[in-house]
Length: 185
Image 1 (cartoon, helix red, strand yellow):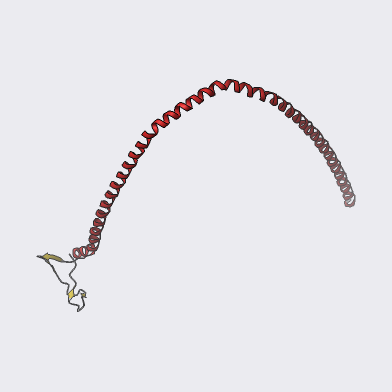
Image 2 (image 1 turned 135 degrees about the vertical axis):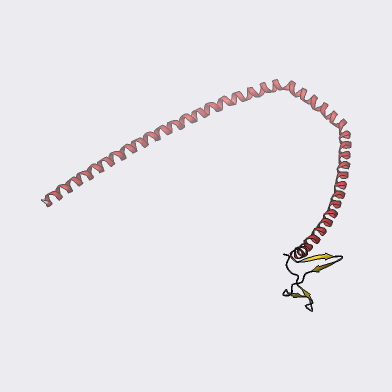
């Protein structure tokens, strides 16, 4: 029975393959017909566009000359008025030119004075900043000494420092003549 089933299955597959091939063939023919139809439509559109361009070109050629003549006739009074206005403005500019040069000279002198004053102020502040920076460096150098004094059991005795020495503290100096003060309680 298995042999009979395989033969019928093979026949079914052959029939399906034939049907698929027939379907593919029909689809290919339809696509070819559709492509041919599209090509004809595109060619027709190209011809129509060409005719449209020729029509527009002939319209533009005739209209261009007429428009140019009409524009020339309409604009000639405005051109004459424009020429008069330009001549008048040029005359006024020549008259105000010397005034403009005087203003420019005054502005240049004022700018020079502002620059000189600014340079002087900058130099003054630069000197002030240098003095403040020196003082700040002195304070920064004194900060460790003040911290050590505050941590030690020491007081100011006139113009010297008196300390409560720590007998077990460190010795310092070239000859180890200094002894460490006791910590502040």
